[in-house]
Length: 416
Ligand code: PMP
View 1 (tube, rainbow, N blue to C red):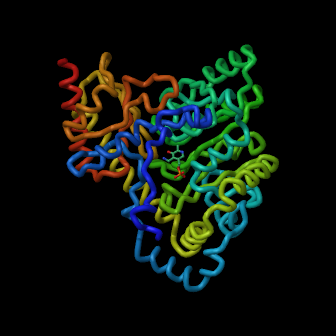
View 2 (cartoon, rainbow, N blue to C red; view 1 turned 90 degrees about the vertical axis):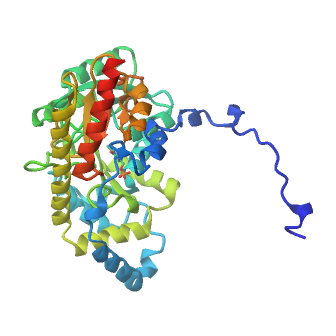
View 3 (cartoon, helix red, strand yellow; view 1 turned 45 degrees about the horizontal axis):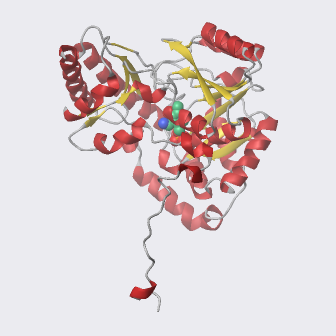
């Protein structure tokens, strides 16, 4: 009889952890990021976490969202809970073009592919362009989740230096020239031009043109990742790279930071031929992006003042950014430096000479403050003197307390 003691499955020792030859070579590149490893300690209530990059969605009117969603189920449940086109819901794709107009892009909804967050858009782009060993150029440092994708597809990542104005065009030009001389074909430049993760800096307008010109000259495809583009604290949003070179740039967008990440809705806007491949790749990956999430986002956009909501997010994040910058200036040892973000979630700190941010991290957690060591954002081990601080989640007084604790840890480190 099923369930009787004689029929219980026998637990045998498996060798799935010991025998690495069972796995595909690409699984080797799949390792837990330093951020993931930090999460369990950083989330303890006594720890001020300046580590996570989760958006603060406490400002969303949950009652409004709730009644929109219940109306959606009652009135449109039969389609909203069904399979749908692999490219994404046509109504949502139309609305996405309105969002992209905010960063100067005049998009055709037919060129939009809806994805499971912009993370999946990057996965699909890499899937269709990169074979193992192909070269991808990224900023130094770069988004940890992108490095994870490139590692999973066994790409070689070449980092190009940044400064306070973003990617340095001369360094990009030199890197592309050197790679060409070595016979290495660069499959793509992955860049986060606005409110960079993790550096917090933005590519200046002048440099945007130069980066496009360099990529045109070297015939390199640009992947522009722009999840924070509408979260600037001053003036108008930056004009997207895609706006000035639609044939060369794949633009990745997301509702994670302007609405909520849990729906997992993002998109890619790509030249036609690339769009076709992305749709096929999406079909094999998921059949279609989640229909219900797409309807939820489309309903929110159609029935709520989403621009007003983004404005209130911007104000909230600006207040937190100010709290962080002020307390860093007040409390950090004089030889510490940091970036001044004009939008987004992150400050990039350079610690005094001789301090290793990774080695210091457990001592910071003991002092009840967490950050992400800079090495997480490099494929090649650099960044040991840096850390990423995020101001998106804790309220201003917790940010001040976190920086106070951190400054004390750095001071002690200097005495070691
Ligand atoms: N790109 C960057 C630069 C990010 O910071 C993030 C989220 N942390 C993503 C992409 C992924 O965002 P999502 O998949 O939620 O759209």
